[in-house]
Length: 276
Image (cartoon, rainbow, N blue to C red; front, side, top):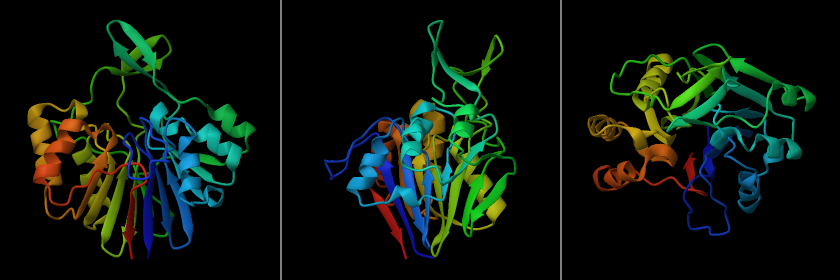
């Protein structure tokens, strides 16, 4: 059950200064001879980083995209120039047109490819329809998160375009990856738009196993002070032995965890988690 999870790209540089960084996220999961990619950043930079880290992405079996925002799906085009032998998994509504709304203007935040592109490239793909799907033994895609924690509110600036109407984005397309390890589950989050606590609670309820570690984005950058405090308390529970959140977590939240959470580390470009 040996597992290695490497952050191929993230907003922050690590000690390996030859690695590229960008506002985005991409994880490579190596488990029992299998190779899985969770998110692709916003460009092909994660591929160059994989080469620097001696990770062979041509051996990919699965690619999971957490949601349809450019900073998590934008690198897929570059990946298809390297390999198309993987199975692609996405949440329902992944290809809806996603926008940000500020000061009466809309800015496109969605994907740079569509279903036609996937068909032209002969990439096998499917949309996740069940709350829990096992893609290989001990690796699960989870979606359809119950919105239980009332403080976890999606910013209304995120919109989807349906016809000529712009509506608040419910992020029903968001998925996470849960990996079974000898120590417990390790959960990979993209941006946690449906709410980090909602998502982690759903994992425990569905899999009935404890969560050992949490990596990825939590979108606490836009949380109210009260919600942020509650979320930091939640992540500060000693049941979480590894808390490596960053990306859209926000500088304030990360600084507070660095001083208050003994299990926190700043997960950055090039970081790897090894579990024997």
